[in-house]
Length: 202
Image 1 (cartoon, rainbow, N blue to C red):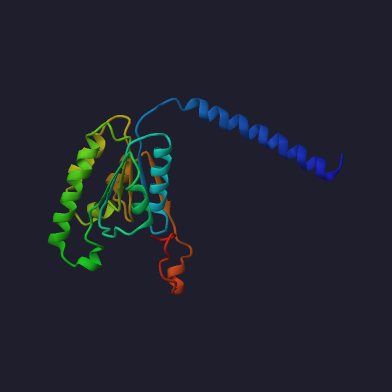
Image 2: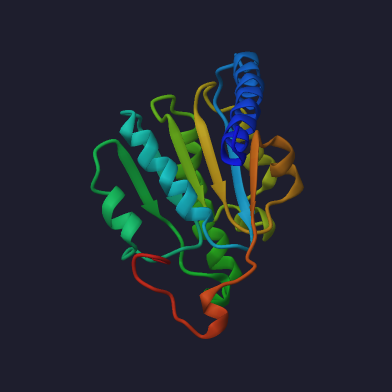
């Protein structure tokens, strides 16, 4: 048997073992329930990942609700595309990032209005997926009472999935989450002086 044939045979054996292990793990997972996913960290891609799940849910004919906290732009590619799709309720509810607004009282009032919409979605079992974009800041800065937020999240319909995005996710949210992704940023074009690019960052 040649060296290449031996490598191929070893690969086949390894993949057979791996498949057996993965198949067993899949067979053990037999619970169906709504998930709370938290996408946090300083890296790029938190909102992008959430909107990828929006596309996936729509592909399955599911109803989706999106509330964007903090952000005020209505010219983003995702908002322009998804807000026109049947089965999506999309709200851009921010006044801009905190360093732009510089008005805590106004930020609190705006966040409260946004949470009223989010809370309604979290009580409505017709929504299969709810995305709370940049919501971690609302908790971090105390714009909406964290206990109210957690009560609404944890008392939502059993099969409703929720995705929360934003940096600095608080411990109480992380403890309640079913899945946490911590985005890291070993390199970013902005640090090289490259401005945000249409279709990539917005």
